[in-house]
Length: 333
Picture 1: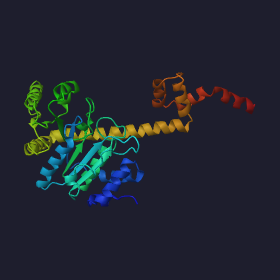
Picture 2: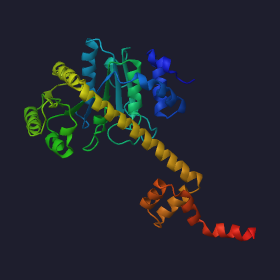
Picture 3: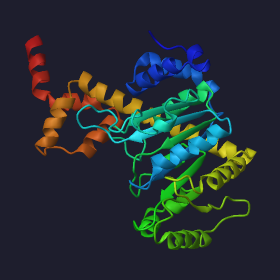
Picture 4: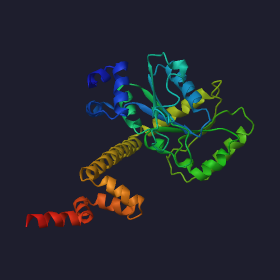
C-alpha cells in the first residue's frame, strides 16, 4: 500500500521508513506522495558534516545529537555510506552506527548507499531530507561518506556545513588543494588531543585570515573537539546556532532557498532527461547498435551525445539502415 502524505505529516515513523525506501528505489507512488509533501518542507535546520574518512564524523554527529536532544530538539540523521558491490545497499547501515540514539523515538536515522553517486552524497539525499522535514524534525544532520577533494555537494544542500579535520593527516595541504575554505561554515578540528592539533588550528585560521570577506559576511570559526569524550561539543553547538541566526536573515535565507531549489530541480531534470534519452534510444532500436559502433571505434560518444541532445534519432536511424529502406521501396514497386 502506498504511503500517504497525511501519515508523514503526522510523524508516522513506519510510514516514513517505507516512503524513504520507496524513494530510494524510485517507486512512482512515492514520488507522488513527495510532490504533495513538498509545500510542507523548508522548516528544519539542515547541518552537513563532511570530511575525509577516519576523522570521526559519526562520533561527532552522535555527540551533536545528544546536545540537541538535551535541548528538546527532534532530530533526523541521514548517514551516507559506501555501497556494497554485492547488494547495492549501504555497507555500514543505521543499525550498527549511532547506537546511543537508535531507540530514541525523537531521533530518526536513515542510512543511504551512494550507489555510485559522486559528491559524498546519495542520489536520493534531498528526497529523504524533505521527508524528514515534512515529518517535523527540528534539525536534520547529513553525514557524508568520506569525501575526496572535489566531492563537496553537501554545500548545496545544508544550511550549515561542518568540515571535519584531524591533526596529522595533511589536512592543511588538502584544504588548500581542495578549496574547502569556500564550503566550510565551521571548521572542526576533531581528535584535538593529538599532537599537532594547535598547529592545524593555526594554519586553518591563517588561511581564513587571508580570505576576502565582505562586511557582514560569515567568517568560518575554527573549533577543537574530541568527539570520543564530548569535549568541545557545547561550544560547537553554540557556533552552529550563531550560523543559523546568520543564515536566517531574510537576504541570506532567500539566497539559500533559491540555490537549494536550483539544485533540486537540476538533479531531478538530469535524472529524468537521462532516463528519457535512454528510453528513446531503445525504442528506436539504436542503443545496442550505437554501443557496437562505439566498441568498434566507428563512432564516438561525443557524436552520439550530440545527436541525442539534438533529437536526431530518426535521421540516424535512416542513415544507419539505408539498404533496408531502399529494399522496401523496390518491393513496393
